[in-house]
Length: 110
Image (cartoon, rainbow, N blue to C red; front, side):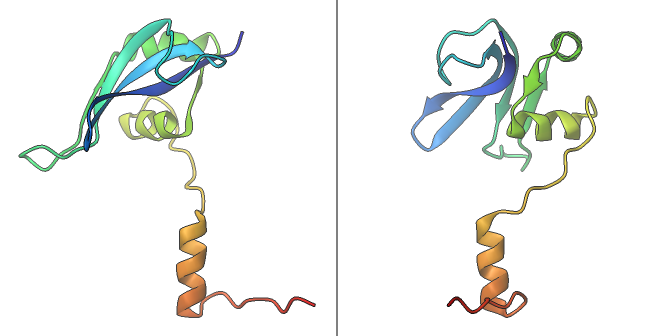
């Protein structure tokens, strides 16, 4: 059984709120979970910060027994100092804008 640490979406439309769940990888995003280990509010509050609450002891435990964090959760855990910060993946939008600025030249297709 592959166990993953991932986000489950809660909240209202245009006001998302996420909880960090430890769940079986075969379960749905908002489906059955094993344990809730934190929360994440991506909408900046009045102070201008995004709020993250983590149960560090339980996250360390799940990582020690082999739970794999999702890409977004690994970025959050890296910022919190629990794991090394993962390298940033290039997105297709960055390539498209770089191509528009002339930094990347398109190859001729035959």
